[in-house]
Length: 351
Image (cartoon, rainbow, N blue to C red; front, side, top):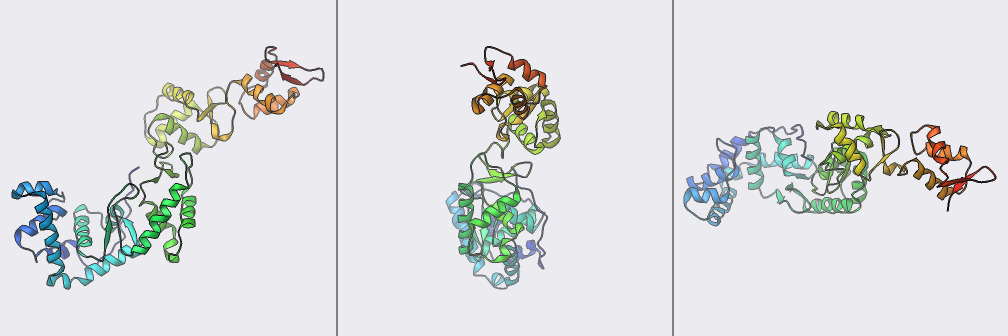
């Protein structure tokens, strides 16, 4: 699911746009234009690719990359850069306050709500070598950090965390935070608060939370709900007890703003082993321990497990599995093809 943009928390004493332009003034025209185009620092916040800039100047993309790298080196050696200590000190303090390592999209959204300003802040992060960037990979998003040792600890803890989960696991946010903290060692106490840990969790591409705020593996249909069955599962899980398929459809529309036809919803519930029919139109989750099958099948399973039972015992046990009338159970019990009444009044299976 998409990352929720957080409320900006940064309060700079400088304006990112003005700070960046002072640094850009140290460059010759073409190098400055390449940087402006690459980082979206012009009138439009749109960033141009190496290939697009190369076509503009009639040069290769590799040559554009060389110009970009040389321009960044030139800025770092310039007088404006040496006098820009305050800019970078405040940016470094922001990264530290946010946890010392943070996903790029979250860092920029917290620094400013304005896309243009975010581009200038990103440029400042790139210029100052105090900030280290790890590019997106199989496990993690683009992220920035200052302390390599801390970054390694967070990476390792996240990998241990998602390796401890299975596709069927769904846990609350407080529990996922606790699990993460159990896997990380040697970090400062102020980094163990829930706000910072949420940002650490947001680094991972392997775990996420579903629309109801429960966490699990991103590969789990219970987290990345795609079809009607997945949404129905989340509805029943949230409800916590058997619910009629009509109510399931209504809840899908209410909770997820997805059109859910009653008949379609019912058909999906029938097909999926995650659901068990426990009454007239009433469905429960298999994980809750309900037995599958019609009433007759439930009686057979009960007798197989417990051996001969009295009528009262059978009725009591079936009613824990099915929302049906007592008479329905008794009618099924009279089926002589499957059940017989012993001399002592108890019922057993026909072998």
